[in-house]
Image (tube, rainbow, N blue to C red; front, side):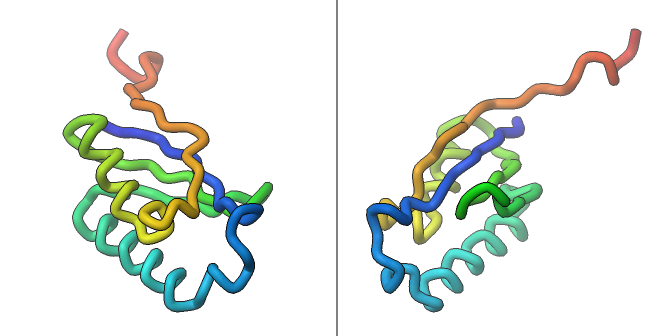
Amino acid sequence: MQFLSVSRRRTEEFPAEAWTPELLAAEGQRVRDLYAAGVVRSIWRRKDMPGAAILLEAADESEARAALESLPLAQRGMLELIVFTALEPYPAFGPR
């Protein structure tokens, strides 16, 4: 199954010095690990605010949520999950 998550960084609750280069590097590495494992299919940075939109592939919702919860920023409570939804194929692209 595929899932879409849209999150934002909770910058109003964490001072600028909390977003260290080491923490952001760890976040990037975890995303790369999930991508290599086939869990993260695509990821985009948001232009309207700090955050990301992620397309995930997982067996079920709990597996997809566990992947998101494994991100260092999520583990520290620095991310707010705004949208999390399961996706299904668009029917107009299937057989008639």
